[in-house]
Length: 168
Image 1 (tube, rainbow, N blue to C red):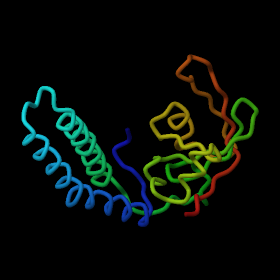
Image 2 (tube, helix red, strand yellow):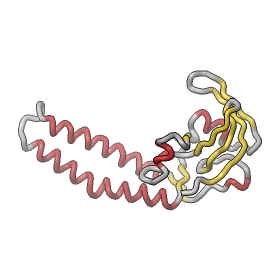
Image 3 (cartoon, rainbow, N blue to C red):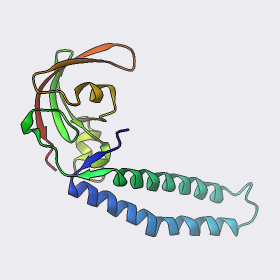
């Protein structure tokens, strides 16, 4: 994953609020669940204890992910006016001749927003700058044609036709 993640102020604030909630409220709730399950006795056959420990692992994983993301975040919006592909923009292109648009960045930008539905429904694909297509188009100009190898080994041609901001 790229070291820097471009986030709008709104996305940064939303993710920071989630991190705060997880660290100040959710951790305590899970700790109490674990303690209550411990008090029930034998831990080897205590389903509640094992479920709470699994939940704790997922929570800590999410906290670590958010801390890393926010620690490497740059706040701002990408500027499409120079015609150069960069993270934070919606890229219009032809993929092997078929028109498509995708957001170049992280799904995390959309979590918990009304726009998550667009992504979930397939109205807008999201590709990481570290994905094969992301690496191929990053830094390219509108009008450029590039190609990349898909994970299945197939060579895919991309013709970049436009850039715009994704409006939250």
